[in-house]
Amino acid sequence: MSETNPKLRAELEGVPAYVPGKPAAAGGPVAYKLSSNENPYPPLPGVMERAIAAAGTFNRYPDMACTGLMNELADRFDVPVTHLATGTGSVGVAQQLLQATSGPGDEVIYAWRSFEAYPIITQISGATSVKVPLTPDEDHDLDAMADAITERTRLIFVCNPNNPTGNAIRRAELERFLDRVPSDVLVVLDEAYREFIRDAEVPDGVEIYRDRPNVAVLRTFSKAYGLAGLRVGFAIAHEPVAAALRKTAVPFGVSQLAQDAAVASLRAEDELLGRVGSLVSERTRVVDALRAQGWTVPETQANFVWLRLGERTMEFAAACEAAGVVVRPFAGEGMRATIGETEANDIFLQAAEAFRKEL
Ligand SMILES: Cc1ncc(COP(=O)(O)O)c(C=O)c1O
Image 1 (cartoon, protein in one colour):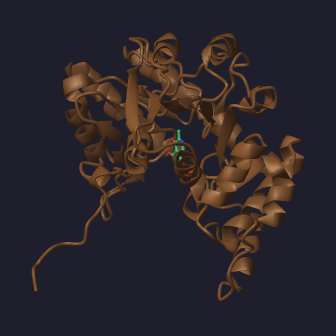
Image 2: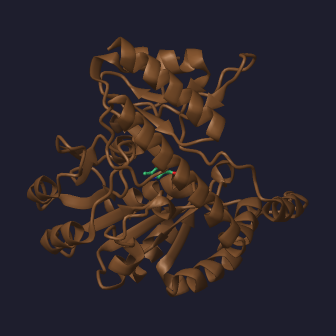
């Protein structure tokens, strides 16, 4: 028998690995994980109760249509149920969007650096990534992104606010860009950090999608709602796109635990958004302190801060780790630190200050 391996799709060769935020080291004096933009607050008791109750039926498949969650989301966002689709985290929905729109020969445009899943899921779809560099101020270069559109373009990701730099695109700029995008190209407004935005000039994607059939909005329960481990996200999009997303979803992908916890979270939104408010106050404190130390910090509207450290990035990350906080370095570029517990933020600031003094 000849020894050949099963034939795999050539597109998978060279797919970059998703680098998850490093966990905090166990056994050290202190160890905080500021590497994955997670919510540091533990689950709310009421949400936990709902999830535990759902766990009692995990011998059964979940509701495949996510009926309860879809109805709740339709009410919450004042959109028809037919404009909604759920998935295993918003990254799961992003993958569904690619499956629904793009394949070999097609092009997908996004800013770079941005969310690290974009190149991975684009390559897996067989489409070609068109990465448009951020401006020197770390902003999306929307003019260059519009200039990059060709007849092959199928999808454009706009990450607002951008991961990992934190800065956000304002209404006029975004509207101007959208006016330049042909109506048969889907623009995905990835708003994973929407609830952390405090700049009133940054538009709510859900308001923008209403008049634009080629706009889809991606949201998640992972960040502000603190359900990262349960994997549930959703898209709001017009009928043909939302229907395509429901077709490309992994059947039964969103567990009943996740569905019920998401419904309970929407009902406990005031309390959860209160926590977001505290994290936003911490964000202001951290950004102000970093600037006082002499760092250049982009205006972040998310639950993290970005420092462009260039060649010193890995050294900085190591210094943070030695101090007791794990951040997310991008070698040769910069590092992202999540706004976490007050003590974690303090340790991060001390490490940044000590590093700054040595520069
Ligand atoms: C911009 C952006 N989009 C989407 C996601 C995916 O989050 P999830 O799949 O947990 O919803 C993340 C997570 O870090 C993100 O930063």
